[in-house]
Image (cartoon, rainbow, N blue to C red; front, side, top):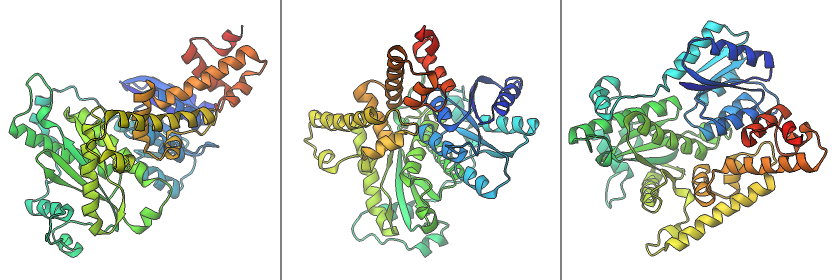
Length: 445
């Protein structure tokens, strides 16, 4: 059963799509309707939305910007874009952000339902046991494994061994490896196949190899969906390495942060391995650097980031730039020092939210940027330190202030909604009732 969010600033279209989907017979648990991007983001933050159906032109926040913000919150969310304009630029931007379809108004109901079914197929939850999954892996995946020569060449390219001769770009192209860059990053996936839990215990050696092959396929498929140039290969018995690359044009395109893209890929990989293979993974992400020669340094960064999982066993995706070398490379660093470091970051985020919670466009990315860490790491530290996630804290402040204003002033509902950061009084009322169990008007009485 799936949860679908419809976003359109024309109420009649939103209602029509809601009715069409509700009577379609598709396995839908809940349908939510929002009238602008800000409302939509609240639903995405609060509900486990599987599919976003959004208009592309909606006033203050466009459908493109909504897609980008939605991916930061839930990188795996599926999206269908609807538009009154057959504009190639819009369609191209939507597809780059992972839209599964781009439909033109007036909508054809049958076409929309077919598009929804296709998007939801990718999200079907597998109920098979790990053993059943392993038995079907050979038939399910088609990506060819890198040859032994390709794998050796790629690992040599990342190695810091003295006197190792690095292959040239021309030599790699001859062997079917395209690494032209000139900008690169390295990601690593540590597959915990040896400790995979099931009634039957850890997998056999054969099954572990098959799981590793499946992980390679899932990684390659996910990266193909994001349209990011990359090379995936084995770098250990239970480890995959990914070399991401950007050419000059795509790197200079500032419409989306490259580090945000890497973070989304890392979180999506971790979730996919758990969801489809029952595998726990640790993902590490290097910084971005220029030149093929930088891969040695980037590989070291990814290895170091993997090691930090020993200090943070309750975290899954590690970006090298989140950690202060002076603190984390000292083996004698005490838990008290680490705790103080975490508190400083979390308290800095909390103070920033205290000052800006009523801002309509406030995002996790903005708070993270202000504290010089990735959104993923900030989310982890904030919840660990404060016992609630960052957006729950934003909502708590908004709801407490709105309750105070309702009880202590004569301000109207639309004025209070505006004061605490909501785009419309109707949306504010929905959130208020969900939070307190009664509507603003009922509280006022």
